[in-house]
Each structure stands twice: as structure tokens, then as C-alpha cells.
Image (tube, rainbow, N blue to C red; front, side, top):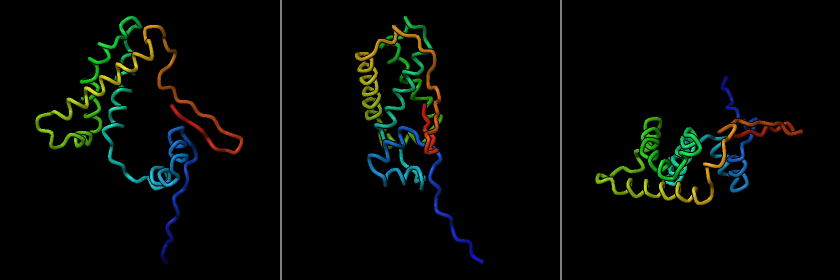
Length: 147
């Protein structure tokens, strides 16, 4: 007797990122969420992850020490931490023996950090939480969740 493969099951919850994927392109949503196709990380998305990590670490410091120079100084260490947790990210700069593309990319991360400081003043707040998980269930039974 041959078993019939079951179709992929839709997720039981939905995050804002996945909802955005669906609104942008239902096929993208299917590939990412239902089919779980692997995706190569892009340089832009990885840079966003790096800047996010830098800003998160910045809030480990006392409010008065949350400065742009301090944030920029965190970039190399956070990049090393990302590479340690995801070695495949080094593929983004394969063939860059002189390190020119990496240097330019890290410079772009610095400019993003500086731009964030033109919008926000982290010395003026003391957050109660960072990266707090939230979840709720709609009347339809759909669970919404995110960080």
C-alpha cells in the first residue's frame, strides 16, 4: 500500500512579517511559510539584522552612554557574532579578497545607525522591555504573534 503525501499544513499563527509577505505576494508567502523553501540571505537583509543587533546591544548601556559613536563601535563585534551564529553569511563577500566590499557594506551599516540617531534619542528613554514576545487570538481562531 502506498501512502499519499499529505499537503503542507498552513501555520496556526501569523506574524506581521508573514502577513506582509502574503499581502505583497501570496506565492512568496507560500514559498516561505508553507513550503519552507530555503532562502539565501541578502546583503541588505543581513545589514538590517546587523544594525538591529547593534541597536539592541546599545540599550545594554546606561541611557547617557547610548551615543552614535558607541553604536558604531559595536558594529564589528556584532558582525563577528552574526558570522559565528550563521557562518554562511561569509558567502555574501566571497571573492572579496581585499575586503573592499565588506568595508563598504560595514560603512553602509554605520550610516544606517547614524540615520537612526537622527530620528531617535536613546538617551531619553528607559524601555521596560526589549524584544518582548506578544500573542493574541482572534475570534476566527487565528493566532497573531510577534516580537
